[in-house]
Length: 272
Image (cartoon, rainbow, N blue to C red; front, side, top):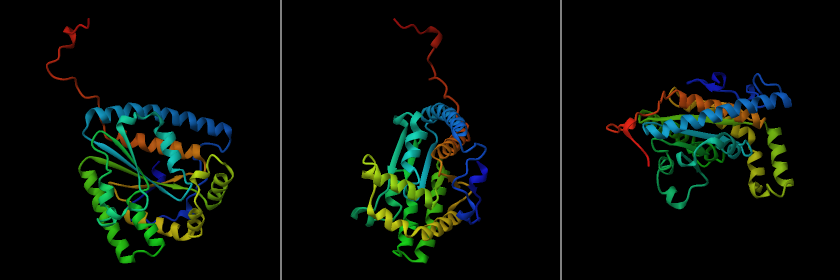
């Protein structure tokens, strides 16, 4: 997984990251089946690790998902978190800010959704929308974008210092793959509810978004809160990479099952 991590101070070139990559897994049904088996093993491990996280209540995990439309943010949550106890997991989606939210600083609504200790939090889009859409559409100046990069870094450092681990994932798909997925939404009545004509307008700005993503990852991939570029053309490989990264983050907390309550003599207990 280290090869997907953006080192601090490095500016990635998304053209050099293959969104169709599948690692050591072949791009056929056998490779897909093998990857799904590995993903299932990670999800089973995730269930165990989440229970320890919830029981200890000393740490939290925040997973940030960013990517172009149709990159698979919803699908990642659905599949990778399928084995997680819903009581210990919170998902927040960030759309256009409300009138009340616009009256506050841009991180105000974000901080309210940070997971409490013991929980896994997932951001479907995040604070990074305020240095992406606003920048691409010319709603804020370059100076403001730079200020927000610094404020985001300080905000994330605050979270880490208070026990929240962060994983920031850019789900990387190709423009051709996006065309396939948008076409599927148009043609499939069961998926049309996801489609907006605005998706086509944003697609015209593809190159601008790629530049904006490269800049933000260069500015905000830090030692304590790194960015990972996840190849996402193949959904089964995307799920494997994300599952492995989540397990890796939870394993890194070195949490064990907490001890039993003091004063309880289990060898003397009887249940009638």
